[in-house]
Amino acid sequence: MDKLKESVESIPLPKDLHKRAKMGVSQVKKKRKKMWLIPSVATVFLASSITVGAAMIDDVKNLLWHISPEIAALLEPIESTVEHDGIKMEIVSAMQDEDMAVVYVTMQDVEGNRIDETLDIYDYFISKGRSFTVERIGFDPTTKTAFVRFMSFNGSSTDNFKLKIRSFLSDKSVLEDVTFPLDLQDVEKQQTEILPDDTIRGSGGESREGGVYVLPAGKLNIQTPLYDRMRIKNIGLHNDKLYVQTEWPANNAIEHGEFYLVNPAGQKILPTENYSYGRDEQGKSIYAYNYEENIFNVKDINVAEYELQAKIYTAGQYVEGDWEVTFKLEEMRGQSVPFAMDFGDWKAKELKVSPLGLTIIGEGDATETEELTATIVKKDGSHKELKSLVSFSDENQVKLKLLSEEPLKLDQIKSIMVNGFKVNF
Image (cartoon, rainbow, N blue to C red; front, side):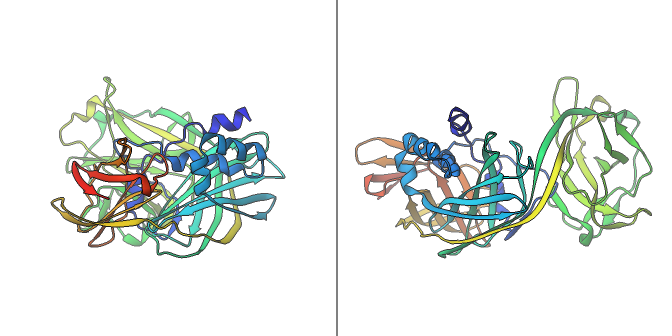
């Protein structure tokens, strides 16, 4: 019981939730890419409800009700189970409103030790939504059970919900501050070549107009003694940018690194662009995972004062399977009120409130909207500030959702303050 309580007391939303929801993809397969961060993230009640993930244990159900009966009351019990190759997946409970759905799942290895506290759902499919996030939010070593939360955004209203897991990683580890036998003051200028779009498996960072350019296939063989499965094949300067080309195990989509430049003062420079692609034995670009190009903007720095380092992620196990469950899920209806506000690049026209949070709907371009706050003013005079922002805008339509730290009771709301503007409810 204590171990379960420890794993659920403080569970934040993913730090890159705002950016993930902007991606707009209907199927998710993780690729090596730069992860984006938002300035601050609240621990919301969606995260606190992890305890429902161990529904097979009565003590866990009791713990959930002890922590928050209001949260437990919102969750719709599903308790649908499928087993494949000795690994059991259970859809424990879920909830949804018009804009998003939250599904709690347990993964348990009943035959071996393939699931641990580092479980990472790698390849999965959700039938409702256009953007998704998944997070392991607890682990019980006694029962070898991992607790996982899936969140989907911007899906059409439907009672039928399908979740499918195709693969996952475990036995993961991280190598911090990995250095290389390389002096950046010796790096020379080079020409770059265009990388065909059909060879790019993943990307991150700034989008580039006019095509993607990388260094030609290199012949270097620079390795670190801490990890011998990756090597720097080429490194060069071009148009105030430093290009670092690395080779990884063939068709490897699991192990990867986050590269950065650091000076003696500890100041770090992250890549502005990152591309995952492939090359054959002759150096020709192909559609694969064995190469990665990190590109740094070094226009205003002295490269010789910096050192190339990396954080390297490894996984001891990669497990494939077929865990699929279809279930029905009722939608929690909210309340809508007219709301007109000009945010510059976009204009709001409607505001919706559900137990999960507040949704602002409008028209225009809200891609640069990173800060938006709302305060719920209750009839008893108390206030509740909403800070955790998710954007799932589509083309010219804007949808921004502010998630609540606890379930919102619509009949207790008097008014809402949005960036200081009062909306009577």
